[in-house]
Image (cartoon, rainbow, N blue to C red; front, side, top):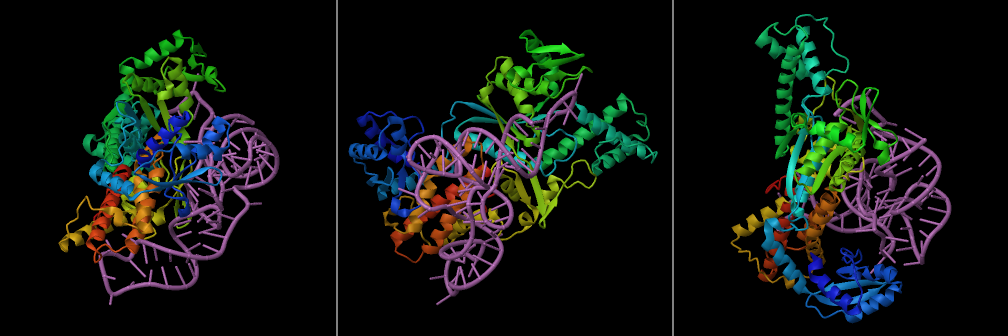
Length: 546
RNA sequence: GCGUCCGUAGCUCAGCUGGAUAGAGCAACAGCCUUCUAAGCUGUGGGUCAAAGGUUCGAAUCCUUUCGGGCGUACCA
């Protein structure tokens, strides 16, 4: 936001000097040391390299050509060529006014305007309930989708599922085996079968409904097992997603790629372009042409495709639907699919640069300081539902978002379950609740808050720091979107909450001169706006009371 | 072996398109509630930024190598 005020002034200077600057090269940061002004820029040092001149000389040249501005109090050169800027109260007045005026849309930017983005996340096959590790995928996907929305994109949230492959067959076999065990306890259970309690319950339902009708393992009995299992699993998944406040616009069924002929077309096109060949009864993709260590099978000798083929067809489908940005959310264990998809898409002449695979590292769960392994196929599985029940949807979302995607995340179940000041989410929410309660109190006292209050009476360090923090919000949205990194927003909101708590502690709002009360209420209200907007992107509640 | 992510305070992690004394939370210690929510605020201690080279005015940040860990490396997904 600060760029709105300062960039035009600096750009005037650059054009007077005759220096060209690139998009995004000019930015202003908040110095750690208060003596270095309200904002600072390193532009002179950056240009020094480009222009092959002394940084301080460039700084002086900029300074000499800087036109007067109602927003700038002073600019001075420091250190190796920093330009330290002190701003006028007018700037902060206009900035705060703008935050309140924009309200629930403050922070929205338009860099993605007119472009369509697709974010595919969750995409778990309907073989059973979601496990805790899925939580990271869900939280990241949903929040990245929101970030892109705030960036200006027209966003579609999509769920890709496969109800045809090996996994589903294993589900059917598992249910069928449990069903048969109801009649014959010795009936063998498949190796690597799905072992959850729900499998047995579904088998019992089948028995109650159909008796012994499907005892024989044949196509028909497996089909009914699969159907029952799939319906149950999908309902369970959707219910969990709803608890986490997640909805998808499109459920894309892998099956449709077969019925539409898209799969066949990919094979034919790859062959025609000489990117695929047959060998040992299988169809191979020439991935070595794209830097892979060996070629990959896309159709097995059994005639079944490997996962790569539908993945390629699916991504082409997304590009054909006109998305300018196609985001995939994958765990690090699926990283192997990415190069294949990119190469396949490229081979068929599509623009693979539009595809952005967000790879997040694995989650490690810790409870009471000890490693805790929720396993997927065991009967005693700890599910995502259990995790939400032991904590809350808000906490689950926040804990999965508060770490950078490319670091392994340690999820401390004990800390998450603790409803106390140690919980980092409460710190943020508490700031919001405090502001709400403040305004309630203010209303009770019969004080009217005027949005246009003169804020030049704000002089305290805590006040000025908070205003500057609030002004960063749009830049944070921009950065978090471009890097598809929600953690940046989490970190920022902690700054906002911290700034507010310090302000609240140091500056009384009621019982001071009415002009000061008014100005501080404006600041509190703007803070509430930023917190609330930030929470909505993270998908956590903005409680009015705690 | 190859690919990829990581290695920063006792613990969990920021900072990484190079910039001014390396930050936060938790833990430890010391303070702050007769007045707007103490789930809060303030302060103290705590670091060879894994190691070694290189690039330069300047490196936690970029490059190379080494060490340590996670995840991949299927005619599974």
